[in-house]
Length: 368
Image 1 (tube, one colour):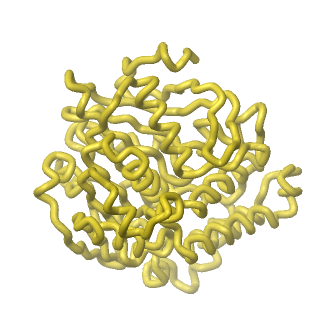
Image 2: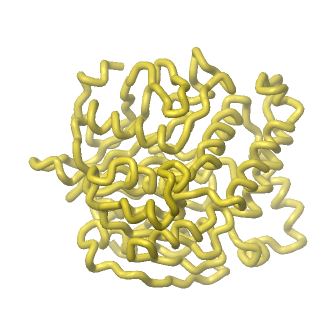
Image 3: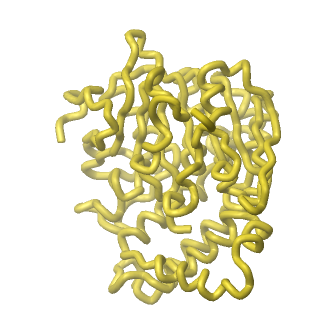
């Protein structure tokens, strides 16, 4: 599982049947063209600084006269705003007839400032950042560049869902709605074990050379992919989709595609470190339930009970603490359950009328 965008997430939210200074930029490009906000030296909460920081983003739709219809959607682990474009537009999950959509490339994804593209802080010289730092960069984009002071909604998938949880606590009055999907407000020990194992696999590749790569990382990326695939879905899903006599070709194809350079490895390590550090209770010095009660937005939480990649328990407890509707996608597809059970219509309905959405469990088949 190098990048979620390389997995079967292309149908994730399909709706059934239907360089200038920051101060000089505007919301003119509404057609999804990739733009960059140049934010200078970006100070991180941990004390580090990303030099010459730039944040990639795309906007679609039109901001209304009241400037109240903006929806922020940051990218998932390894994903980019380009991967989110299929879900945006008339009749889709976020309908640009009604909303002005801001898609953001999260720090370290290879588009925004990252270990792979920094000229001054290349590879592992790139400072450690957190999910909160991602949110702070997005807040600066909205307020300083796009001059947006309030959002209709913040939403995201996986690491994007983590950013959504962080947004709701860091800026509780900034949005009407929060929609974290397959994300978590706190990485559990199981989550930390998974992400740490993948980092270890990359760093143990002989070509890694203590962060000074001498060649593409083939062995490390292959092992990291194997670990990811074991957790991306449930055991039942893998058994149903890969017969024993097909296993050799399955792994061979995995290894064939798992060839990346040191820049990509550095990106993956830094973003995974951010996920490992995700801990809203620790950040605010409160229990998870107490933290959740500080949220002022209306919230829709979407989880998969069989998610082995992002443990769904903290998100479920968060929803329970504030009596938010919880949509459980009960499917062997695990973390990619939204690809097997279309959640797009529910999300679109919540954006339009939050009171119309209630807790429910949606079931899916293992042979999807």
